[in-house]
Length: 427
Image (cartoon, rainbow, N blue to C red; front, top):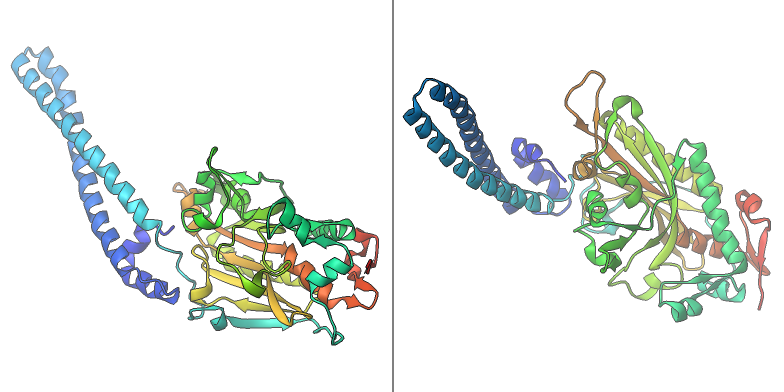
C-alpha cells in the first residue's frame, strides 16, 4: 500500500497518477489527510502527557525524601490523572490509526510514468512481437478437439470429479505438462533463480501482504474452517517468505522460482473465454519472483521480460508483448507487461504471462525492508514477479499450432523432457 508520507507530501500528484488507473481517489485522499492531521495531533498530545508523567514521577521521590508529603501526594494524584488521560488518548490513537490503515488499503498502487492511459485491454500498447504465425489446414481443430482425439486431456472426467475448469490430463498429456514444468524450472534456475516448493494454502496475512486480500477475496477459494486460502499464484507464498524481513543492500537481487498448481474461482467468466484450457479454476504455473533494490527494479523488470520472451521463443510460438494501460492493470502493479501467444485454430491471442514491478507497494504491506551499508533506518524494498510460464494456454497454443495429420508435433526444446516427438491421434 502507499505510505502516508507519499500522500501527505504529494497529494495532487497522487490524484493525477491514480487517474491513469481510472481511480478517483479525491475523497479518500482528503479523508486520509484529515485523519493524518488528527493522528499527529493526538500523538503529540500523548507524547507531551507521557513526558509530563515521566518528569513528575522523577520529582515524587525527592519530595518524599524532603518530607514534603503533601506535595508528593499532589504530584501522585497529578500523575494518576495524567495516566488516565494517556489511556484515553492511546485508545483514540489506535482507533485513528486503524481507520487510517483501512482507508490506505483501498488505494491502488500508483502507475509508473510510462504506463499508457486507457480503460480496457483494447488500449494496451504492443511493445514488440516475434515468432512465425502457423500455417494450418482449413479443417484445423481447436485444442479441445485435439485433446479428445489424441486422448490426452479429459474435460468431461474433470467435470465429473470436481466441476468445469478442472481437467484431467492423461498419458502423453500428463508427460507434456511435466516436460513444460521441468523445462521452465531448469531455465529459471540457469538464470540464477533458487527453486522453492511453497505451501498451496496461505493464511490471511499472506493474502494481505501481496495484495490479493481484500481486493480479490471473491476470486480466491477459501477454506473457512481454518481461514486458509488456496493460492491463486505462487507469487503469494513465495513473496511472503520475506514478510517482516530486513535485508542488507548486499543481499540483492533475491531471486526465487516455484512451480505450483494455482486455484482461481474466475467468477463471471463465460463463453469462448472458458472453452477447453482457455480459462481454468485449477492450473499449473511456474513463477519467478525478485526482491530488488529500488534503484535497480526497472532494469530488473526488463531482464525478467527478456527471460520470459526467451522461453516463448524456444517453444517456437508466435507472441506479442503488451504494455498494459492504466485501466487494465492490477490493483498492486506499478507497471505490467503481458505476453500473449497466438493459437492458430482459434485464431486468437491468449495471455500466458504477466510480468510486473510493484515498486514498494507490496513491500509496505509485507514490512519487507533493507538497510543500506552503514545506514540506520530500514527502507522499503521493491518486489517483482512474472509467470514463467502459465501452462494451460501455452499447451493450447502448442497443440493447435503444431497439429499435423497424424497428431501433434512436440517442439524440439521439449524432446529431452518428453522422450517422444509426436502425440499420435488415438481415435
